[in-house]
Image (cartoon, rainbow, N blue to C red):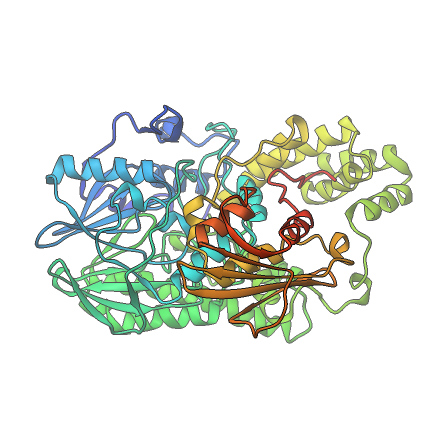
Length: 599
């Protein structure tokens, strides 16, 4: 760390460049007064880095916390620091195109208001979603009612809703650890995530795209602004795109090149991303656009100006992902496991000296494990790991082998004193899982997690450790953010709706249940059949004619109402209406506040 170029202030100069106005006070509320965003709470970052934070992460927090309206280049502006992501505004002939309208309506509306105070009351003439993550579309109703063109990469809707619904409960719970939204903003607590400060907790919305971008090189002119697109599926998101604005010589890299190392597999959970194609799309962007660009900006962080700087920035981002991919495969083919590769790999010195390759959000450690997982899966080939006991049973046996509770705590204290916090955490985790009521073990583990968090350069690691410490001593706080909003559910395709039902079936409870229901969706002019047998719900579009237990004639909104506990009153039916009750009786409800660091 002593070799890092802390004297280099270029990022601070770039982050301040083009500043026009800040939101003052930088507190955003819902209509009923609930705070959903508070930048002012991070005022402590103006000070010197304390012992409770990694100096490199502190520096990144000082950069990310800068908020307000910034001019990127002539006719292009950004709202930064008013949510996890940036909102970009491109002025056209008649109004302004909004790119990535943040995570929540309240923050997007506040950002648009700040822009209009400086640039006039320009109408929103189009919206662009660069990719399928909620912090890039969730605030759309804060800027439009949907009466304008909305552009998005091919596959956007499928991935936007499936990620937030299928595994949404588990991801939301883990996101509490990743972003630390409920941690105190302080030198001892939450100081950001590396990608931004944290997630807002306002209202999430979704308006479906009206125009799909289906190929690289596709050009569209919106409100007089010519846009050239590059599709990049499988990179930072399953559905993602960059775009170039030729008349402004400006290149938007979405979330494919930001001022940190990104995640190959996020700690909240997601599909594993493909570093191989990620690097190739970055190389393609350099070839297609970099020579003609004066500025590159993204959906997070601050822009980079100057053709030479742009090529250097994109090339280093490309080399970072390619190096991790290739070296992981090289060592994997030498017989090393993901954990071993994560300990052994060393990044090239030139990349280590570049601030934007540092692991503030992703990390080399968890990214190479993700690359290993993508190719070989969870199993490392050692049969000792093929059929291990689950955590509680394993923990009890470890504690017994080490002489019981006192033996474990004694060893753990020794490792804490020796500075081996990693193994102390392993031992104390066993102690807690062997006896959840052991307050002494919980408090000592909380102390270890706190120290690990304070020493982490990675913002999400820090938050994971500190949230874990808090929950060990104070209990679970349920997530504030709900990504399965009514609008998100309404955006599910019919197939996705029935998929989401199927993954809620309690298999053992449904073993002996057998039934079939036909659903006639009048507003979609679609027929669908669900059949329950052997604890599995199979669904089929346009089913063949055969007897079923129940036929329901309804709208998609009626269907979603039934599945969220609404009444069947007024819905036309033929057959045994009790079949619907038999189906809903075997559906499990998700558990939004499940335990993570305790059994």
